[in-house]
Image (cartoon, rainbow, N blue to C red; front, side, top):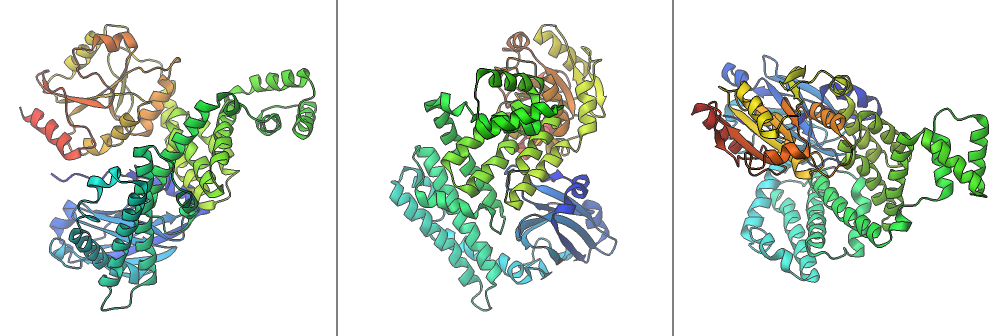
Length: 559
């Protein structure tokens, strides 16, 4: 059974963002495409990265014509970016794209045995045609050195900071030397050298940030200075991973600063607050605008002006709370990092917290953040993922506003079933599983505020695509520490992330009722039930282990 690659198909989204971005046109042909191969894989998937979302690829499918030809366009935000071709799991390659056209040709008769399968023309053709040999040489060189290759990470984390830096530099140099050995009999492409150097350098930066995180030490100045390259081409998968590690490191510094000086980090300058109110509060009178302008210019003069600001804030609390919370974080970013890193963290603030906001809040915050970002690649990257988040706004609104939920699952949207009950948790779950007796059930226990849960849920659509259609997916949302109801946010997340199946949102008492029935009752754990209603596995493989999870479901289905 072939397992599909986890991607976000964003065909509808492309029309939203293209007007503001360049495009890469990808065309080509599969030579000797026969009927059997076409039936197995009638399209090619092309993917690219977004610097703000390391867990996702943005993809579009190019249907194959009868003669094997294909053509597709994808947006491109950086002057050069990595793109990925996946032909039905049968052939895969990475190539470098720029605004313009790239043409790719490969032979359907040689998918498994060709020494060189893909041939490129058009933009970056020299680099793309030399890349496969570069990878071969890089693998050979890394395998030839245990210290810098196969055994590099075995002792890296226990090294002194000086040794760690030296080893990371030596590994980067070894990887880059593969360009020279791969092009001994030809002229090395400058674009290939730049591409390979970017990958090797940024793996070095990644592992040094990981070293700092694992050993709880500060990164040296040269690592902080390296952040200026975040907005430079090419954008690679390695860049996205490194940027994510830097973001994790920055989060730790921000939290430390909040902890050591909470009173300072929780406040904003009065003039900034009055400016935010002036520019974002609704239905201000001309007198109110003039008074806010005066406060922005001169600061507070008496308590009456503070009461005046509080009154307007209360009328616009939802919007202003969003902006004030963001600006508190932004103030810390500016104190800790330089301009490029600060701009990256600003756009990342919304990207990493999207699940916390309604789609209307996402749009408000995105518009505000983008208006203050000077680096176009960062601004466009945020715009791209926010448009992905809100593209299902009509379905999200239907799901959020649906009222007639009962103890038996109700189909709110095609494939999405909600259920509500005040019953004992065990009785409620038994009612659901009894309803689907005769079918295999995959149970997901999750919590929206748990990062591991969100990571695993991203793989659910791929898992569903690789098991029989009659397998039932049941989701149990476990309550956390939240003090207010978040069901609207949960419903939005379910629809946005295509979590088709039956959803139960438990309260704390219902969760405790299930403690022994569903042990372990932890977020990001999974179970499989056989068609006879008995558990096949209470500790089933996670969706991220696609092949193992699918196999566990198929075995339970057979038995």
